[in-house]
Length: 296
Length: 303
Image (cartoon, rainbow over all chains, first blue to last red; front, side, top):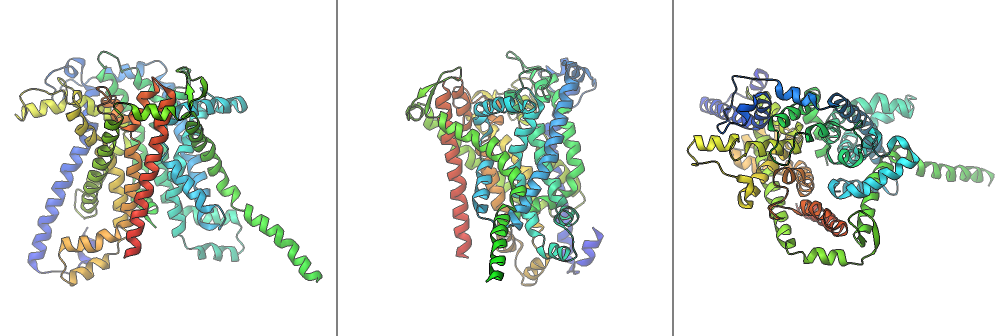
């Protein structure tokens, strides 16, 4: 902070005073907004920790003096919860890695090669981005079933099917974002390396990849969220209990008469933690990462 | 002669090689998107012209009857109107708030880190779960929001906000804005960081007011970021399903349904009609985005 204010030219005192006031206003506004944004999460965790009597109280308080882990115990008590969690983690991890790899290659192709159908492919990716997932459940069900007869690892009730479909749906946006990144890297860098005798792979791995890394970090966020939070595909393809993912555990607490709100909030809390951790890991790159998407 | 022949022979090979060179790079992406995303769209379009039993068995061609039935649906116009309001209001409010937030977060102040962190939370939580938490907070008797408003003497007793369309719609729009803010703000923040600082120094020397500087310098430079933010938001908000589904199920009746939710509701009674709605839905969003892109491109060439 000191560094930036030292660089700025020292203005008249009035301006300086104004700046102090405006900084205080900015600070207060930002903190109020931050508290508002975090409140639903706070209420979720709080509700998860409240004993049953307080959850069903007609006079809910924004604190609790009797925190309990009962709701979390209920959530873990859903048979197969550990397995569901692991399944979700496996699917999301595979999707993140493959999505990064495939979209990186595609972004390089779209920026570094000059070929006939480039515009067609770009439009195709943009259109793919607009596909409403809920509209495709029936055709996707049949597609996955048919794929299963050829490649059983990707058929119905397999984690492979979730990986495949989540991967494909995460690609258009990832490619679009990475394209901006690769485009911004001067081609002269690669040419210099080529003259020095580096081959394609070396150029890709040693030069392009590190420069695109922040973009990959940002795209990984999107593919992780897509895969981790997916309800629709899991509900459509997974017909047995062994290959369910976390949303299935959450669904147990929704009841036709009155929902088990404590259980829902506890399961939701458990489901949110891994995503938050993932965000913590990549947050540093998020702004610069999104920069790729907004470059023309 | 011989020399040219020798030279010409490899050109054919190199030409083929050159044409195929991008294939290993772009191939996997095109294959995956083509088979898993676009092929089902083709099937969807095809099935919108079929007569389909509720069990999913295709009986035969239905011509354009699915579409006729859809457009004659008594609630169709109301649902369409809901969708227009939903998309316009949510995207517009999201954009305005995000422009403000991005500007705020781009300043240096002690709480900045905390505020930027907080902004990530609605992004990380799944949209469905956020909607469920809001539904819980809006609960008529056990909800945080009702209790708070009663305590502040804004109301005498808790309200069933989600039970009536006139109050359910604004709340669901608020949730949609809430979940759209983080991405939009971060995208605009990324855009702001591409604006070089010298531009502002120059404006300051010229004596331009803050507001004036913002309108004539920041906004035009922010245009590529705004474009990306609006396109992505148009798509996401238009296709948004979990918020309405989790909070009201589109009900009572179809009164709080957008076309995306309507399409899902129709699936229970008539798969063919539902497919027709999907196709109409998809066509609408493509036209909407194309229209937006063309309009913004035209403005660009005017300058």
